[in-house]
Amino acid sequence: GAVAGGGGGGPPPMYSEGLPLIGNILAFMRDPLALVRRGHAACGGVFTIRIAHKRMTFLLGAVPHAAFFRATDEQLDQTEVYRFSVPVFGKGVVYDAPLPKRLQQFRLLSLSLRVNMLETYVPMMVAECEAFFNAWADEGEVELFDALSQLIILTASRCLMGREIRENLFGQVSRLIHDLDEGMQPLSVLAPYLPTAAHRRRDAAREELRALYTPIIKARRAADADRAAGADAPAAPDDMLQTLLESRYRDGRAMDDNEVVGMLVAALFAGQHTSSITSTWTGLELLRSPTQLAAALAEQDAVRSTFGDELTYASLGAMNVLHRAMKETLRMYPPLIFLLRSVVTPRPVGGYVIPSGDVAMVSTQVSGRLPELFDEPDVWDPERFAPGREEDRRAPFSYLGFGGGRHGCMGEGFAYLQVKTIWAVLLRTFDLRAVGPLAAPDFGAMVVGPKGATTIHYRRRVPRGGDPAA
Ligand code: HEM
Image 1: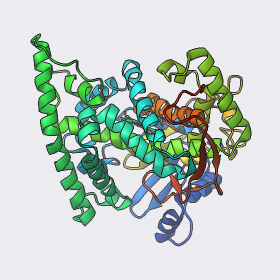
Image 2: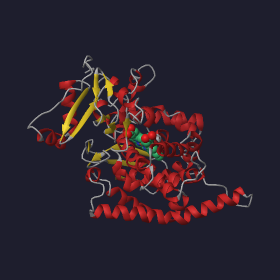
Image 3: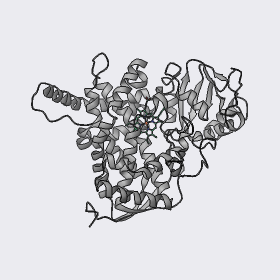
Image 4: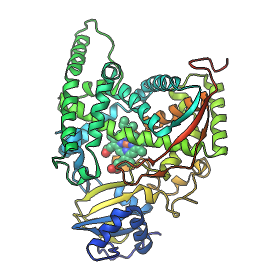
């Protein structure tokens, strides 16, 4: 598995199979992960596959990962490979903005995901979860993935998009988000501006969303001005929308309405499917592991005796069993299976030099299962991250669920809080069991989640909205 050094500074080995020209294309379309695994077995941790006119160079293992994640934006660039997001996020936003502006936009976005903000999101997440699960019957079966996708868009709209949206415009906005989503398919990656019906609906939805936000933003800016002038105005809301409105570029300029909406959409897209998928797999695995389930239930009892019944930032932080369950789930089922960059300056790694113009690819999915990085990689075992074992600490950049380096996930803290809140509430309220076989990943999707049934059975242990001690 490790990279054989001594490539002598030449390009990485070329891996190819099947018929000339179309062999790789067919193999890649049929099962990209299997092709990458075979390339790794044949060539080691750095190799190139030619797909039509594109050269894709794969980086697998600790040393190759470091060459990817330690690169600057001037060396490995995201603009080209994430261009398909531009019609959804909007003009002048993130991957459509020149690098210096883009980096400022990311920094401004990160202000709304810092610890002080995460603390204010927790009560909103808890309220959304409790209301959502209160509406379930006393006993029944649900499709977990469907249910948690609905719940997470409610939470996201409350914490990120603002109370105005959550309380008055939720139906309208979720329809628009749906249209934006449908406009980001594998075909859209290749041809983002092809005038298909889905792309036309996408563009209309982006425009409608901006129009919907115009009066909301106007009212918020007016209240900000009142507060600044010392006039009586309600306290500023604690959400991402407000943080973005109050933020300033280095030259003192505020974001315009289109930029604010674009950043909200970008955050929503980064967090929605990834979190729905991860909370689902976490539960599906947890409910199939008697020892981990018992440990998670015991942990809820212990946390309640220390912190009381209220779920808070601190009590969620103490749930290490749930934390490791989610972390382990992301190792085995990362929703973003490939991370991409274009190579701008020739990139040395393991004795080879990746030429400029290549697309550098990391496969979180394949790397998460490499035996050189994790013991028994096909076994779901959260204890591998427990104190004393900490398999992810053996080498930098071996654990890739949230990427790494300068473009590592900004929403990691938010995502852990979200998923842990969901499972804390579920475990405290219901007896739960998994129904049927474990779903398989849907590798044909843009964001890879479970395919088919994700059924669980629940029976209410605590009366609805009631006192758990009763
Ligand atoms: C970046 C995973 C939730 C915001 C990333 C990357 C990964 C990732 C792998 C790196 C992409 C790359 O290197 O090209 C996940 C997973 C999540 C999750 C698995 C849930 C379980 C969230 C949430 C938010 C968010 C909830 C925001 C509310 C971002 C942003 C970036 C990012 C803004 C780009 C950072 C940059 O390029 O500097 N995420 N994410 N993510 N994520 Fe997440």
